[in-house]
Image (cartoon, rainbow, N blue to C red; front, side, top):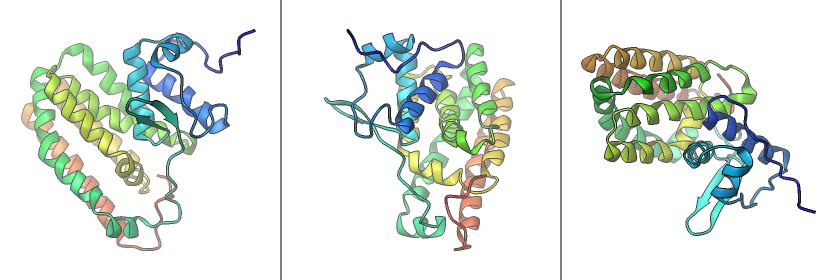
Length: 244
């Protein structure tokens, strides 16, 4: 008798969030053991009832938020996000300037991407971009990982809306690189709400095909994120575990 699968077919909803939520819950509950290998893409698609494209987006989200790691030639393995509760944001920045280096890269690239998206986006891409903004308004701490994932997905979808595979690959690489940076920056109190408001401004500029407005809104968003992180980090009593 075959072993019952812990995965359940998904009901109609944004599939990248539904699949990511289900796999995350299975990892946190121990049904997928830490270090355990997830089924193959083919098996996961069959068990979840989704396409390979949707599954890959879900796994990308889980990797960004620290719930899985992909080992080339081996597969995808369950893990838990690295703890950050015992280290202040100020100490983390002082020890590892990667967060600032990554923002420097994003500030050099993403305003131009937003400007191109305003000019070249396909109208059907707008609904998916807007859905990520709505997901970021969830203030339940239990769903913080989903909020972090929605933040990454917003930037990814803006890049993909242009329809240029080279830009899509670059944006994917930038977002994948920033998993820890994103979790920490969105743990600054109030930062999630500010980021959602900024995303709304970027989205509205893209929707009305305002290229200069989209560029400036993205630039302002990234500049503000760095400013808030650095200002908050000056107080050593603040810790990265605090939720917005």
